[in-house]
Image (tube, rainbow, N blue to C red):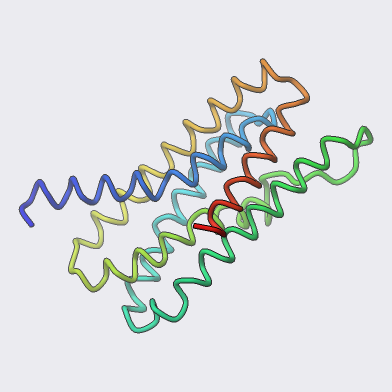
Amino acid sequence: MTFSTEYISIILLAIGLSMDGFSVSLGLGMQQLRLKRIAYIGLTIGLLHMLMPLAGMLLGQVISEQIGQWTSLASGVLLFLIGAHMFFSAFHLTEGFRWQPVGVGLWIIAFSVSLDSFTVGLGLGISGVQILVTLLAFGLISCFVTWLGMLIGRKVYRFLGVYSQLLGGSILCGFGIFILFS
């Protein structure tokens, strides 16, 4: 690959990998999150989009064939369960437990949307790409795309009100199902 072709390929791959974060962040943004929380969520997802491919690159191709299918299954199930909880908690008028993208909940969602980058990292480690450039592109682009999704979701909430939690949960469930059956 030439210098520019490699970078273009890495950027396109990073955009593709960040689309799951965008879809999930649309639903998260509908929870009336503060800008500080949105920034933190984007940074966390960006960080895991750097760490997961790094772990994949370090493990190599030997393991990729054995666990590649399990990462998609785990990611799909996690997203579906979080989405289902958001959807059904919209019907409860009392203030009980609601899943929030903080603490362990944030790390679960960030982990689930970055699992696919782990298997991509397995393949990239063998192809000889520039590791630092690749990881920075993955992290920065997924962080930016996540912020963008949450800000769009936040605007949509103003139009949909209470129904936005139903929509957000449906988006997460739908994306989880899409991952499970694709």
